[in-house]
Amino acid sequence: MMNTLEQTVKFDINLIHKYNQPVPRYTSYPPATELHENFEPIDFRGAIAAGNLQKTPLSLYAHIPFCDAPCYFCGCNTVISTRKEIAEPYLGYLIRHIEQVAATVDRDRLVQQMHWGGGTPNYFSFDQVERLWNSFQKHFTFEQDAEISIEVNPRSLTKEYLQGLRDLGFNRISFGIQDFNPQVQEAVNRIQPEDMLFDGMRWMREVGFEGVNVDLIYGLPYQNLETFRETLAKTIALNPDRIAVFNFAYVPWLKPLQKKKIDPATLPSPEEKLQIMEMTIETLTKHGYVFIGMDHFAKPNDELAIAQRQGKLHRNFQGYTTKPESDLLGFGMTSISMLQNVYTQNHKGLQDFYKAIDAGELPIERGVKLNADDILRRSIIMELMCQFELSQREVESKYHLTCDRDFGKYFADERLKLRQLEADGLIELRQDHIEVKPAGRLLIRNIASVFDSYLAKNETGRFSKSI
Image 1 (cartoon, rainbow, N blue to C red):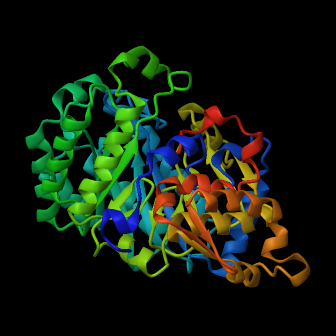
Image 2 (image 1 turned 180 degrees about the vertical axis):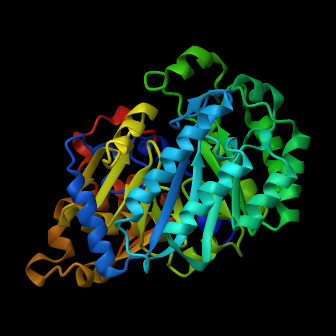
């Protein structure tokens, strides 16, 4: 991937206005909206058995849902409480969930990646972190160079806690900045003094984390072009390895807390949000970060940037990853598992999650079993999302599309839509190749959506706009 704004992405305001429609983020295909409650848990067990037979590598996710206080922008499934004692019973059920699933997974399947998210994983005391860590180590076999990451809240961090995480084996870490501006922080209930953030980053480097990711959000109350330019300057001074810059989706009909706590009159206009996004891409690219795609940036020597240059970037419910295709097992309430032909989501309520574990049942609330067409389309969508190009011949070979039903015939309707995208300069179609052009990289979700057979029947209000 070349490292200038002109070479990686072209900001075309007219095309953005034309294509800025609600579409999935494609952390999976089919999207999570297709999971349904009449899913049969036997299909989950069958998918694990198939993975055992094929020795498919593993990726693990643990959800720690607790937070001391709500962040008004947040769309995650969280439990807000200052009573830290509520974490102890959850930890017990989480460990039982690990034991329940691990009993069905062959021990010679190697874990390539593990991530703890939330919520706030460092809501746990270090003793609780250590017990959860030991449970995973007891029941799964980790590759020696496995990527093991954790999200932390900088408002409740110490250097000693970070040293403990590193000593256990965590090698990547992520924390949310959102915005450095005090007025913005107060408006979203996320007050983090600048010194706190710089101290936290310094500690992370001193204890030896191999990679640090930070999150920013644009479109928050009281943000404008100049204040966010200052936030970017301070973020660059932090020198993280990866930066995620998310678009704030104001959806009060879905998130009652937003309706209650955020005055829409304080939000930047759609035009200013686009200006902020353009300035962000230009600024980060100018300072050496590679535009990976959508809202992610990485240093040129970071694994994500290297994997994309080599055509080896992947994507799952956790976002972009360097690890090859694996089975993702999600543990804890609301966690999502993503197996080769089955996706599931656990119960979103604590008590429902506890009740299922007590009954000896898989705590699955909903799921979906993929058919052959889903798997074919998933491959195409993920290739476009990650590599910005697609070889039709490779798709035909991998999925055994024959001459009487080759790529062009199988996707005849989609080809018509692709021609329109080509006419607008978003892609280039060659005899065997689809290449996303610089003007299309910001609109990659729209391009990928051409191959989404579920999109037409979905309510667009369930998705955020592509920009």
